[in-house]
Length: 105
Image 1: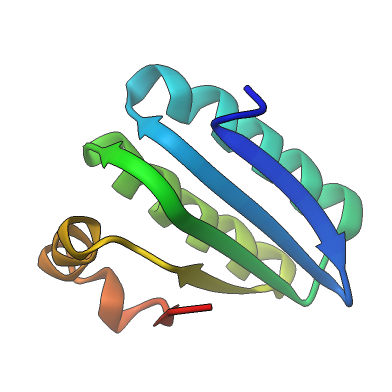
Image 2: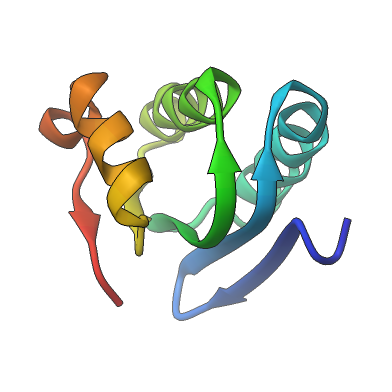
């Protein structure tokens, strides 16, 4: 799990750095760990850093969209950071770029 997800907390921000392949199997455990951090810290901002993600299917999109719903529930803002060109294209095709800020660190 360490190579797929690393969660850090600083300055009222939870950073979830994802890596490797985000598919149905990994998305389930990643989702649980991110939600656990959200409800524990109740941060002002959640950053999902996908800069080390090699592959992401629709489960990755679902993971991000689900975290958007969770952050809205608790008054936290969501930022997606460092997508590869391929993943950015997928995010844009899904319309997530109109709902979530997508930035480079």
